[in-house]
Image (cartoon, rainbow, N blue to C red; front, top):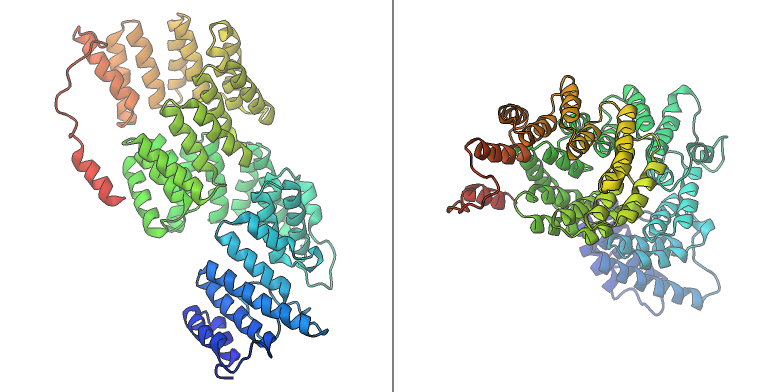
Length: 558
């Protein structure tokens, strides 16, 4: 043979995929291999070239080449009664190569992997379903599970993820997926191999040295069932055993972001970036927190870093959306939609899209975005988004249903109680009920400022300004929060106590110089103090280019 197959196999084994692809073109075009008399050789050569193309990410060409190889393989089978199908246990990963025989199931798996990489889920699933269940190895079961889940065949996904854990208890992806699909910690742990096996499957050592895995399963199941407090406690316990574990720190930060523990989440995200500045996972969540804290310098740097690390990840486009929201909400919306286009299962993309649509006064479309997030995994933010979207176009019945669903899913959550209160507060006949829900939320979580602010607003609406002031001042003794100062300033301004209002707006801006509500309130107050009607229209001077330099700088950055 002009080109020995051993040479292309050696190139593949040494990860020299470009050279393997070029050499493969010589191999498959060699005149010494007659496709008619030696179809099995032609098939093996094409499969090798397909492996090289796969690793070069030329997935379309790889699929075409693999299918050609299978055609010649089947031609060989039809020509002889002796099948050359190997029953070997060699790995089906495109990373490993075997030049001695063709495993048809393995080639189908590689074709499916190419389709999966191209986001052609349904076509990939058809290929995988052509592999008998008994012939599937660990890699095949995991891909099958992902395909089923992406096509919303949850029962099939659960079956395949369970099979993964029966073969190896350390497939963390399968543990997370099963927890999110509703499996209990006990059910998942029972899947782990309990006794030694001749099959070579990984066994779980039930001594103290591996008890961490069971704790990890319990933590993920707590989070999936919205028991955020229990999940955080278990993750904190794991963190003592594995200090500076990036995965655990990220999981904790994500949960803290969801439940509104902003300072703790920011601290954990910053710790992750100090350990590994090139992490992209969950960094869009971090971007949202920086926006909430009005820390635009850090947000700018984060987006710049993410773009230099990997500009193709969905997290990067959500972070871009967060950055651009202040300047151009429609541009920000296009970035959020791009993140979903890259990964249809990327929940922060849906959350960001929903919030932007709500801000753009498109609540019906916002409902669809938050529903998209809920279908993937319902959490507090998607419930909050749904409730506020329904309220924005006066769908009180639907808003109340969504709020009650949140309360059922999270019975120990003060934030879920507040959501029900928000719905009742939107209706003048429901304010007494709203007051009870806000007070219940504060009993459950005394430090929940969102409920305190909502209750204060309710006092103001009903003319109990004194009650609002005493409530807010009580919280100010323990929490130096800019939102508390803004609310107090608004109450004092409404009762014409302008000097007190001024001092609280100034206090809010000392804590957070970027607080937009404080800036606008202070501007309005200054007009009141000068005797000018703050609601009177005023002529705009040529101030539109005031921030042109900053716009240009951001455009160049992005």
